[in-house]
Length: 245
Image 1 (cartoon, rainbow, N blue to C red):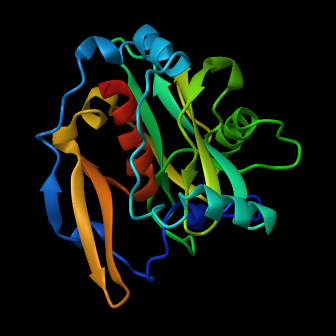
Image 2: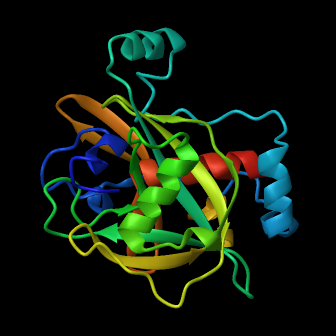
């Protein structure tokens, strides 16, 4: 996600106060009682088949987009020009040991959501004909991901945010690069997480933040010294829901 005028990562999570520490929020539950995904469904060709010919399934509605999911609210916001379309790339790296998800960590000096983990992506520009164009362009700008190394295999349903963004998560199989050329103003690091880890519900935590405005329920997926949460975790949960059926 970019911090320049062409994109704003704050659009991808509900508003939180400055200095908010999501990792300090207590864990309400762990989703270990939910169905596990069969190993053979995490193979590249199985994923490609599932995304291109999905069975009936239901995306999960979280507190982050609960208030904007209704069709009439979406229509009103679009009519008023208050919906901004955006896209992110969910890059699945083709590794010998199995698929891994490539994620970015934002730099600590950014005004909004410093240090948070996200997918590469951002708002659609006028020259972008489709969300695929946006995801590819932003990934190239942010981390130097070479387009010829990317095979788009589908996308997840739009992820709506209370800040008026409609985000299309674009899923792709990606040949790993020897190195990634980062936009160092906004991207501090790129790293990989095994797909099987992220698709295991035993690694999905539900945390509830209590404030004067009420409570907010969000997902987190800690991995080693990384803390994945919010919209990024929400999109990964939807990938889990698609693959488990």
